Image 1 (cartoon, rainbow, N blue to C red):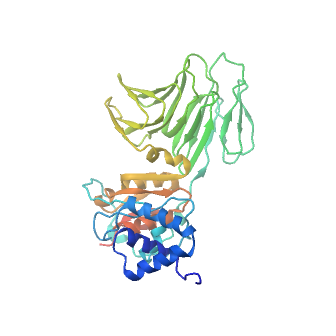
Image 2 (cartoon, rainbow, N blue to C red):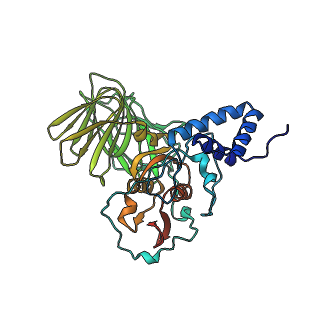
Image 3 (cartoon, rainbow, N blue to C red):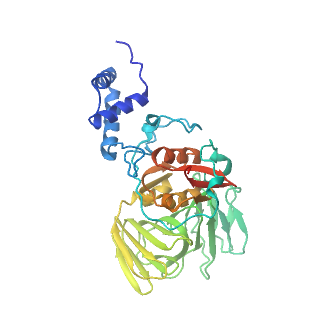
Length: 398
């Protein structure tokens, strides 16, 4: 028997129909023939079947609630990007993970006139955006600013003799061999929109910094604590030292650590500070109130308040950004666009409050263009994107 002439998209469609119990007799026969063709196809079948079982059945795209959509972030799956807005849905099935879109009441509207937006046009969003990359600005004690994107090979020596250099992974490394412990010297690293960076502090603590974030820290830790100041979002792997606790200060909140891995989100333009603990333990304090956090939990506090909301979470949802993936679970389109705006360095505006409150569960690779991500959202939600005066407009034709 010769090799079947059937596309991967059709096979994926048949597997989904089989999982949902709506496959035709002819489709079932084709699926059986494909399975018998090659032993490797059985593994492919099991992979997609598990994916669709987890995601649920695909419902009508005109409904407010939809399931079984968006991106499969498996590195083994890839598709070329296209510009055309007119596509058959099954072309996107290799990327299916899960999307849920819910309607709730919102409270924002933009001031522009809606009729100015042509949602039917085929836009190239790459023209006004760029995929983020590793870049940052380092400020030394004397005020000198070093552009880390441009100075790839440069070796920097601080006033106390500390050597600052980059390794093969473009991480900033602080040498702790300095013997000058008489005074504390601070550096500050700032990550712009469309950037990210990581560094290893003098004590061995590793820090990943997200877009629009900054960290102020001593080049050498002295005394009985290791204290840094964070604005924005960072993931920490703190070097264990019970005699010298590691403390992160952000707004009114302090996070005290002995040695652990966790994520902190404390952007200046967001009203909450969230700490997500992966392993170890941390003690949070805010305006006189304290909270001990356990692994697998997240603590959130509103700025100006001292009451922590603690809940068990899937920590990967809040830490995967450092590994090149945005993950979402029941997250509003407004929050997602806010995150995309930082990474792709663009601005979003909504034509109506209801689009802000659509909610998604899914994932997106950070190395994909903005065209790819927005087209995926358009396919799975009753919303469209347009360009107006270098801004991305979210809505749909009236």
